Length: 358
Image (cartoon, rainbow, N blue to C red):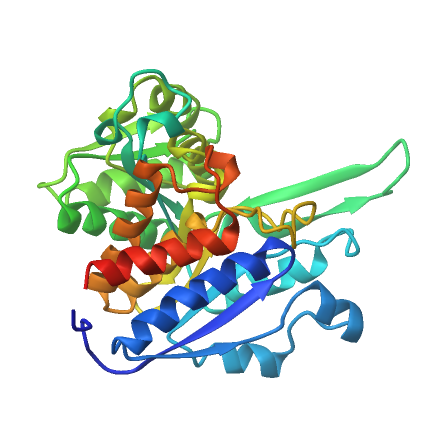
């Protein structure tokens, strides 16, 4: 089978810490197979992570960032190391890239590949298939706030949630376009404007205005607490869900549970206007199992599939997704999903499935 073609694209791989190194190795294995078949992709790897930070005291310099900003897409493995207790290097790398590249869309597909993976009884893959679109640069994670008299009995901590009309409007408009172009049956916007009288009000008013531009999309509002319950009770009702940074973080992790756990969940952080994107599995570095060939690489591979589609190679992305789905269906998985394979064997099996389809 020939590649989708197109101009050469450049991808930076940053394995990071713990099992990030192992799952990224399997992503590289699959990408190298596709490149051998003709996929126009250049790959470079970088050692940003705890080891480098502990050695140099620098997580990512301005020169490093400028170099990464020149790539078409970034793939991140996982970050976190107990030797860096405040996870400073992880914040500087991940949040730094999201904000400095203005990757304001966090895209989290929730897709059940097999009924045995979900904790819900008698649910089919057709019933758990929706997308959470989360505003990625504002809200409670904007880093605005501070503390007074830290460590004393009179300590005061303030965490400011930030919302701008520009930020809210652009994520809503992206979500409506995503729903319209992707053929999703519905769009729900979640906020808490009955309690958050300022930020919630901004989200709600802007949602009503943007919805008027997309009459073809069946749009509805939900309070986030109610939505969290209803997504569990009746997930088939939902197609696209759009919300703020903190609410989206919580809601998408509910989706992770519905689809089979962290080892099955990929994500993308993108700026559709600049064409820049950063893709990563949502699981952590899991240093307790690092180096033991036990990590599930499916989330990383599904994130890679998202990256290839973003770069203009949808055929190759679909091949990876299809290979993962077939392995799950036949039980050829790592132990967290009940299978007998190790990390490297799963990567080999994905390559075999892709090769068998050519």
